[in-house]
Length: 125
Image 1 (spheres, one colour):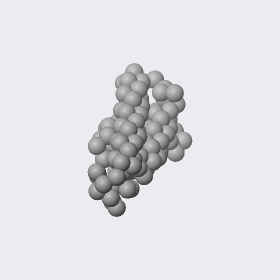
Image 2 (spheres, rainbow, N blue to C red):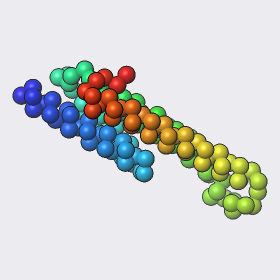
Image 3 (cartoon, helix red, strand yellow):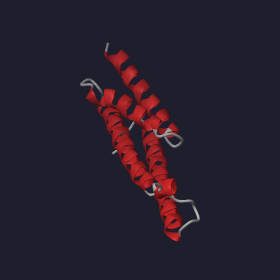
Image 4 (cartoon, helix red, strand yellow):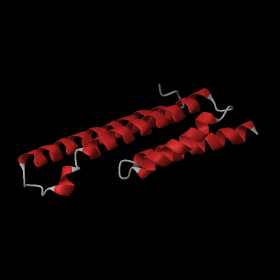
């Protein structure tokens, strides 16, 4: 029974890392990765290194979603004004692109760090 749960936890974490990579394209996958990792984090019989990866994925997904929401706020003026109608609209759009790039690079960095530790079967923190 314990070996089956270990395989299931490893499968959930692997799927979570795949979803975390796909979250670079769509934010919906970040939420899927969060909930799959949450299943492992809430399990009492999870090994320590698997549990650390689950917490790492949850932590990274929440921060990415928050940074993405913050970056999206900068694009709101584009709904009401044309791109080149005012200089401040262009400036806010450029700021939104910069913040979105920061969020994207953050998720890519945490994915690379987490996957490298996961393949070595070591705790990520």
